[in-house]
Image (cartoon, rainbow, N blue to C red; front, top):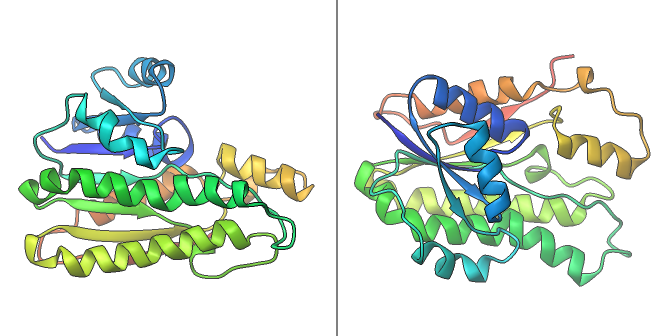
Length: 229
């Protein structure tokens, strides 16, 4: 039975991935930002284990994880959680920059560092759910895109560093996906939100599981997913 640790399992793509893995009987470890959120996740995914750690404060993750039970081995670490705040470069404050950098880049790096022993033990897989913004930056998306460009660099460096340990690393770049984050983006853009126009989170989950389930003799490094309509 495989063991997976997932961030962002409470909504969108993270929920879709957790549903699929739970359905096939895998063991889930779900990161929650606080005890209340942990209870919600435990109710949503019976049998799952929760770990409390706030991605908004990456400097506290080491302390938080050191006081909780962790898995002995991990077949995958799935970085799905993220935050977005649109705005022109001339208007974004350091607080807005730092909030997105913390959740979207520094915390994934720190969580990966803390769990590398378990991933190495299992010759596991790290999946970074990036974004189309990780490949190009559009107006108003500068801060978010910068964090996602950084996440690509993190994944590329980690892949090279951990090749000999057998840890695989995949970056997934979904286009606009029908998630609560997408609804927020439309609100910030001042546009009406029609979820039927965008990718179903379950479709992104399918691509993630395809990368996870690939035989050990091969590795999906980068995978882009775009709306089909």
